[in-house]
Image (cartoon, rainbow, N blue to C red; front, side, top):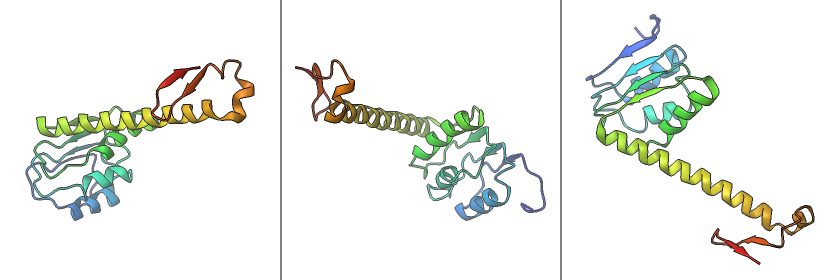
Length: 154
């Protein structure tokens, strides 16, 4: 059925679809799917959907429903996929979750934002504390960054 059908919208809510079948679907038809409903698919876990999103198989996906899929625990790939869809493909994806999964999604967003901010701060800190760059900065002797990422005035 998967191989011989043009699929844009696929509703699999409440069925026992496995990670393996979801992988087959993503590999064969992932470039066509725009809407995917996996609500109450109790067999799915992070080895399926999360990794499919990580490896970018669903490039046209704009709506994803994952209510009550409680074996999904890792949401970093979901957050990165959502951001990739918006920045790279100009697709504002709607991810509909139950309250528990929505909290996990928001926690993953916050954690990723903190990681990105930390990397930016560390890069700036390394750059500003690099002695070879001091000649380019007229006020470099006034501000230094400590190893604990706080600013100290000289």
